[in-house]
Image (cartoon, rainbow, N blue to C red):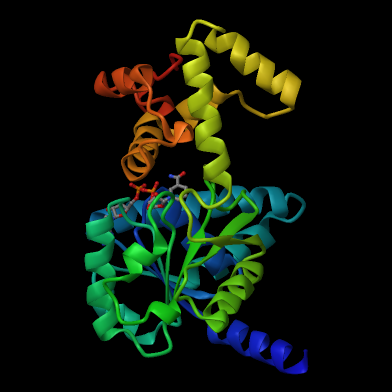
Length: 302
Ligand code: NAI
């Protein structure tokens, strides 16, 4: 037990410098939370323009947090925002910044080849001890890691949107992930103030593996004519106590993202009825109705 706690605290100390790759919705949130908890963070994206937008987004989000947290003392809130912002820098050159990093968290586009190329290149320049982690929602960690020679120092850190609000992190142990790496990722998640759960490297891990087939079955139930969208949503909110019904949730997640996930799983395991696709979902996506973000999905938004 003593040795175990010693090694965990060593691992906790080890992850101080974090490189977050991808400054979009998830990456900016991960960078914000890591910086807020005292880590030094470099946020990487493909262009300075995107990075400027990400940095602005982080500052605005921190100000919202500070306004709530320091409602009585706004000057302490401003000091908090400035302190956290000092912990974050940005770069469009991943290879040059990974030199000094303990952990790389990748949150770029959900495309296996692009992720493999990124990690393959970083593997050649990152220090020996650096741990690599992907925030992928639907790809296998082992497939992404296969482009590197550090399979033992590669795992999954799956955050939830919006990252500053959502407490859960799924920590994924692929078959080749070492126990030490896995423990370091658990400790890092706790250091972020999150609640980690352990997952195997299986499609959708825990949350999406249950949530995506549930949402797809809601669409099929509607397609069979067994319930209106509105009634299904009300039923699940009031009957199951869910904060959103399945159609509201699909619109929030994005219909393109949901289609991408289910299509990938269907291709991998076509006979699994849980991974069945839906003509209605496909139609909406082909019409560009992708949910809240485009103003229309299953519902219309102002
Ligand atoms: P996003 O589209 O908002 O952001 C992706 C960012 O990565 C963009 O700013 C893009 O310019 C950048 N990027 C693309 N290729 C790059 C490269 N080679 N090097 C550096 N930057 C690059 O996407 P989002 O939603 O933040 O998703 C990112 C990852 O997180 C995906 O793997 C997704 O599956 C996963 N994820 C998404 C969740 C969500 O609710 N959106 C939830 C949990 C995980």
